[in-house]
Image (cartoon, rainbow, N blue to C red; front, side, top):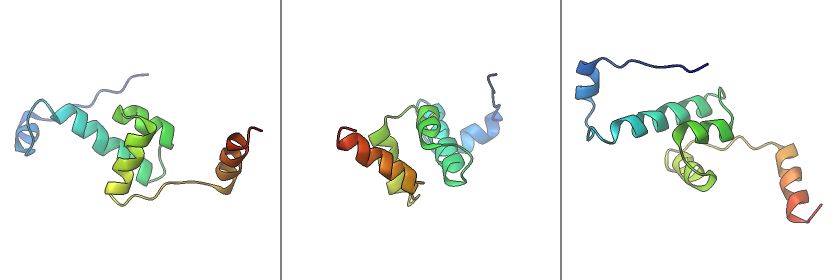
Length: 84
């Protein structure tokens, strides 16, 4: 299922941003908001934003949004780093 959002032209024009950057920036805004509220996992949020892991992590850090990182994820990462 694809979801298409319509933003009225008057609102799109009111956003103080070059028109060519608007779609990408709005997707980043939506992705970070959904991630911050726990509604979208990191991987899916970065996919929505169209960013790599590092870039999306940097975006979250720049906005002061903490990563949702569980103890289980840490253990998985450590096991992977140790070749297990």
